[in-house]
Length: 309
Ligand SMILES: Nc1nc2c(c(=O)[nH]1)N[C@H]1C(S)=C(S)[C@@H](COP(=O)(O)O)O[C@H]1N2
Ligand SMILES: [Mo]
Image (cartoon, rainbow, N blue to C red; front, side, top):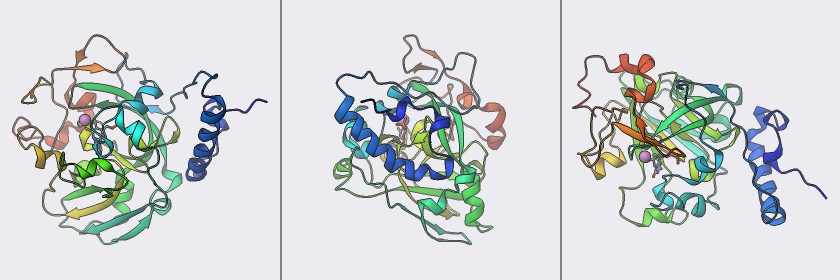
């Protein structure tokens, strides 16, 4: 008997975009089957990257699926890079509600299915740079954050948007420890958030987002360090004050509000001039704004980015 495993299918054979949420349940079932029946004798076949490249350099190749989904930072599930893939397996992401509040004309509680309009879902391959000086190239699937912001109708005095991760100490055992000020929070200036590169991701490699990558919805801001990419978002708040962010609260001298990738500004404990691309041996130079200067530098015209790190 030969059962085709989901990762043996080409993306074109997989259900059409509007059904991606159902596909999640299907993939979970198929995944369970595959583990039970095939884990011992079938070599894992990674999915092919899908999407339009954004800001990639000639030597940027998508980081393999296995690295993207097993080398993660998601402190709610542990501080080791391998913890999230191990301990987020049973994390419940459906039903999922997102609250929009603060200075918005359309505040409210929305089901994920209503929040993410399937017709606006796109696949985009982005560079991904962590402040710990490693990097990847990731084929995300998501919708422009600007679309969601437009629908929320921010008021004229709204200057920032703040994001909050789910608080659930039972499901997220890391929240029982004092590593960060839980729940995890992040924020962007409204013009940064409305930049067309800012994405709310619901998938990776053409598949529904694995829990360890921030299911069911996480932020992706490719010109900033990875920690700005807050995972498992339950709330978006429009505000006129610069929001507090989890890493800035924990170490204000190490992590600022802007957190733009900047090879010229060292982290107090290490240099940001180079990075190790996951899978590579030699380190490579880090690019300003992670290679997206042409698109985003104008957002910071006149600002001292050494002070506003
Ligand atoms: N809620 C939450 N979001 C988070 C984190 C976290 O610990 N908790 N870690 C951040 C950091 S430091 C990085 S580098 C990215 C990693 O995303 P990835 O695992 O999909 O590569 O997630 C960010 N988002
Ligand atoms: Mo990070």
